[in-house]
Image 1 (cartoon, helix red, strand yellow):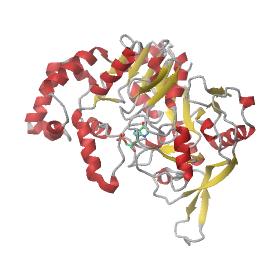
Image 2 (tube, protein in one colour; image 1 turned 120 degrees about the horizontal axis):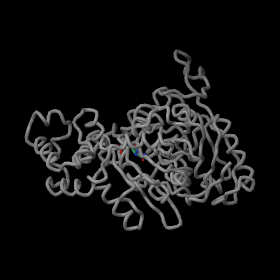
Image 3 (spheres, rainbow, N blue to C red; image 1 turned 90 degrees about the horizontal axis):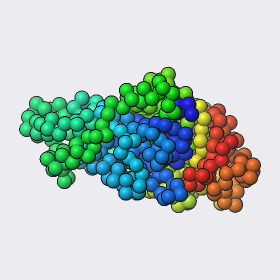
Length: 438
Ligand code: IMP
């Protein structure tokens, strides 16, 4: 397997967990390179259904030698300890094959508190954050005042820095959220530091050096993104985005591999669109029963927060934008089976936009390539839809392209033309084996 990055080409929740789990069957090393416990990856295999937030989905494949949380990700120690305990209770080996980058930042209890307060105070400007402390943690990373995982190697030094933050106003001035240490729910300085360091310290390593060494010796490396391109900090619908780089470029920053190492970029696209939280969603269908029907059929409820996802049709120009940003070399389509039973369904094929300085009523132009201002909703462009005939029989768990309903095949081929990128696989159910290779 060439060095491969897996990214989401929509707003997250495209079904990357299943694709990573499948590709990991051929990988030696899997690296999760961005985001934190705001992500939720659901993987269904014979032994059960697993929901992971931090540990790379590759851990479920015994053949994967090393699983890494890279320096681009942020780690909530309590959440990670819960996840490790859950995996070990299920008989999945974590010790000896799991590592944390010493440069990854730690999400502290006061970051979660800051998230909660900021969302509460933001009123109509709120982002709809998952409340996992992600924005505040990355804010402190950029402000150069955060705690890196390397702190887990030395509990005394970690304690000294925290006490300094509590007592020294000069130290506090450098750390945007440190005043909230006192308000952090349930945080107990000595108990928590001792536990985090004792239990997580042994996993901390200089993983970027290790990942580069594995690459040099020819190991098969899989880099796993969390979230999706449309909520990437720079390329998404800013400011309604997450605080990390969910795009393929983020894979290098977040893992330590150089850009020249990346050979294959797999973009994951769901056959319709969902979004959790606030922000523009041009093809949303919440004002009619389509949104609810997609939500129920696709079980569109958040893995992390349980929130209902907003649902709508596939947005082909948006995916094309995301495919270009990521330089995807192939697309894997997920959840096509969810469209079974729709007599007709839609996808946006282009956008209509007012001509600046023109007559609002009639001077419009059709655009098929979106720009950053179309993505963040400031250009006023809106989507135009194409109707597709549906299919009545379920296609769930289908594995054979030639046996797939002809209308389903036609829509995949049409979407492939719109994407300008080959659709190499079509997932037809949550189970690992429910996939058609084309
Ligand atoms: P935060 O990163 O938790 O602060 O959330 C910022 C925005 O990104 C919110 O709209 C969240 O709903 C969204 N978001 C964060 N993580 C995910 C994810 O894994 N899937 C989908 N949306 C996410």
